[in-house]
Length: 435
Ligand SMILES: *Cc1c(COP(=O)(O)O)cnc(C)c1O
Image (cartoon, rainbow, N blue to C red; front, side, top):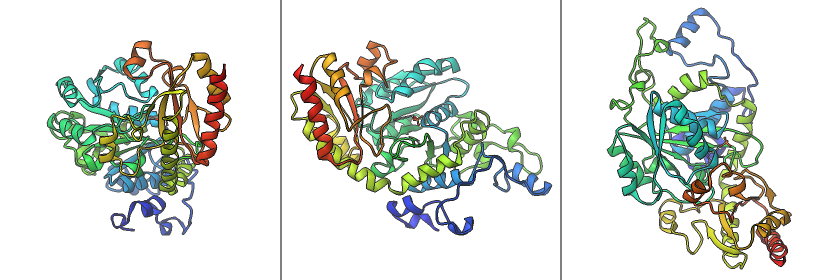
């Protein structure tokens, strides 16, 4: 199937899969195998010199996982994709692949709590520095913070939990002026609402656990690359160094760029990080994510419609001091959302609870339909008090910088009837505000 000819909704159901190559199975088979028959010694020589690409061991590649990778590559128009065992593995492998041997990441505090925590606690121990731009809308701050050691700009296209919209095109242009890539966490937007590669991003990472899977039943991550970034500028010697493991049939050592010119980034993560750090996605979980992707557009459309109704409802409530979502009347991100998010700005929102912390707790304890969970992007609507949970490891000062005030409540809107969801919030407000 020549995938380029098909539109998004066709690719999300069929991309990356040809039943003729899998005994005509209509549903993608789960290749529940750890290892593969290698055939004969001549084939092994070809496999190990990369003149033939084939499966050796499921930690490094698996046919079910490969369908998921190729489907995401098709949806994002990427030159390469790699699936890993979690969104955190996708973020970490990507950023370590860029900063090996020391380097710095330029980012903002408007990040998923796990990412922010890892920046704080882990990266320094690997010799990697993190620089924060406090105002994500101020391009000048980004420019001033770029140093000779900066190896990437890293942002979330729609941030978790406050739905800050990043100016991807401007950030990509800026990064490229300095020969560094723009890396975008596109988890909240999903490929349906936004394609960062189209606006110049170089690497995109996903937690597929969230809306890509959409059913809260599997942990998974993905990395995709544009294939357009120049890794040969000298800033990233790891792509130019000859590798012992990349010998050709004559024994000559080659570089990643020589062997995998179209998708050097994801191949390098596969060969170095998946192979040795080992966060491989299981084929059964890849299958669950593939099932989710088949209905991505339909789910996200309805979730966006539900979210806009709930935002409009919350804006009228005395129990609410502010609402953060690009569709909110007072959102400073309406203009960026009009440019980048023409199909809607996702199903994640936060609001300020207007009451005491006891009333806030009572509100959370009173909802009946919303599930109290740390997940997002599920078919079921979810609620959480971010400052005490997902962003609970941040100090008070870090929470202030990340704009997570103590009254913050995050909602992830699912596929239920929106009137039922609003009635549920209303009865919880009534209970909480009565005391
Ligand atoms: C959940 C999440 C992650 C981490 O993904 P896991 O699959 O839970 O490891 C990364 N980024 C964002 C924006 C997320 O919401």
